[in-house]
Image (cartoon, rainbow, N blue to C red; front, side):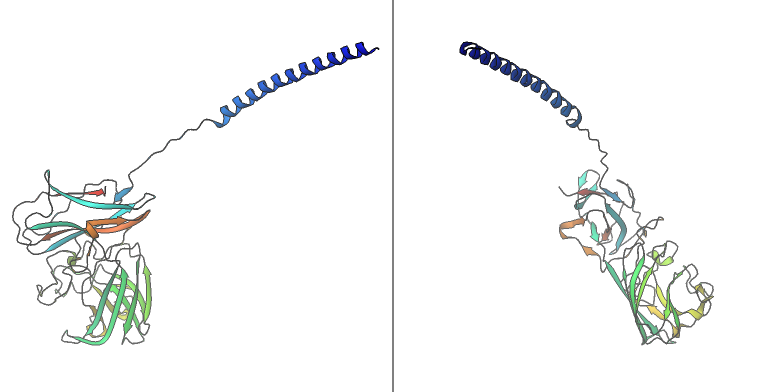
Length: 339
């Protein structure tokens, strides 16, 4: 093959090579387009659905209408509070405020009546004392009980002094209306909270009572007993209504484990110096209908109730009768998020 023929052969090979490159390039573009289409089909489509429920519930219900019925027809200078539990199920804190209406007119306070929302003390402290045969406090035996005001269980600490090394019981002692009747003194319907040896000092308590204190059948839940200002002839307590807690010897209990009491031995017992309120916050029969936090209810900053994420917050709706208010009051209070 001469030189001219060699040059023709090289040109021919070069043209064939370019055709192959062009063919493979076009095929590659088609392949890339097909792969891209596949990626869009499998990775480019997203679907999302959600059911959004109200974040705040009151007493286990969403947006309930709660009716507060005044227990007295002619209150004057008194405070009536209802305890409620506010559950925040959101993932963020939510601040709430109370807006009060009389018909369509916003007001707070009304002449003679102030309606407000308050916080609840985290713990309650009860002091108990022994008494002599004349019913006077003698200080020979004392006890201090500190417990959570609102908790699914009755949780607290009991510290005692002067008790003998014998078996005692901390009891809830309810009253009946005629509490001085010889048939009504024994605390029937009450409950043993904790039994212990008297020389124990710091006794931890954690028990599910499955009830509120006072219980709805306890006469002391009503305003009529009135343990304040010697209105009942005997007591000058800070809280006018509530539950009574005593410490008695177990030998005076039924079968040493339960109420009612079988013997009256007051010089061996310790008695309350005030009435208390405890709320079992998962108790399904409702909260105390009227509670007394006149002395220790907590004023909220700017009237705002702060609730934390996934947390229950107790709160009070209180009606303060500053004067002898007369007439009928039709009040609506709405719990709203702070804007």
